[in-house]
Amino acid sequence: MVWIKFFSLKRSVPDGVYITDIHEKWYGDYERLEYVHTYIQWLFPLQEPGVNYEASTLTKEEITVNLIAKENLLKSYKLMLDFYGIVLCDEKTGEVRRAEHWEERFHNLNSHTHNNLRITRILKCLGTLGYPHYQAPLVHFFLEETLVNRQLPNIRDSVLSYFLFAVLDKTQRRNLIRYAYLNYEPKDEFVWCPKKIQKLWSMQSKAAKEEAADSLGSQKDTLISDSEAQEEENLSADESCNSAESHEDEETFSHNED
Image (cartoon, rainbow, N blue to C red; front, top):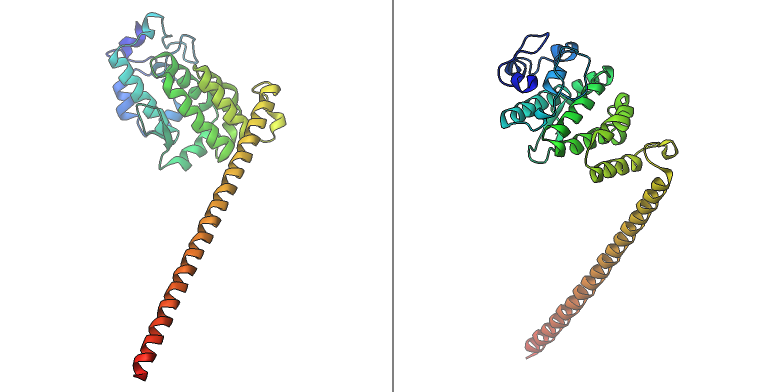
């Protein structure tokens, strides 16, 4: 139970630090988080060994983690999100967004692609140790930043080849792949799902766009009809007013004559 002990009283090897030291003293120390390579296996353990051969691998008994372990894992996750220029904005759903310092951190992520391996490890660990619902929001964030906003071009292939397939929930994973395909260009080079599925998604997307266009057209027609009806109503009101004014003029003229 080496990993569980690390969350309470054991120091990491070879750095010799407690997890509380990492959470409190390393937070925001981007140079240390970037260039020290031995802590990530302690913060996010897996059943498979990593670069740090002195770090403990996760045992089957440890997978059913206790509350303290989960709390520390959440702190570790927030630590690394901040390092990448991301903030966890909903602890229940796992929704993430850009942090205020995202530009600086995105630049680092683009130029130090060994972080791709770290993120893959983080995603796998989240899925194993009680936070599987955090996986899809983080992957969706990276898909949006790489394929839509085009802010992280150097990690795009890792997002598609590794981040995506770390998501345990099959429905969420399929939805993410669909989102990736619909935002990927050129589409004939998309290799992360069968062509027949791509064809189906393209047809569905086209039908949805046509339906949206038809709906917009109907709304415009309704607006035009409403506008015409209002104009007719205004015209009728003007005519009534003119008629009333004309009648008043006639009465005034008659009184003046008297």
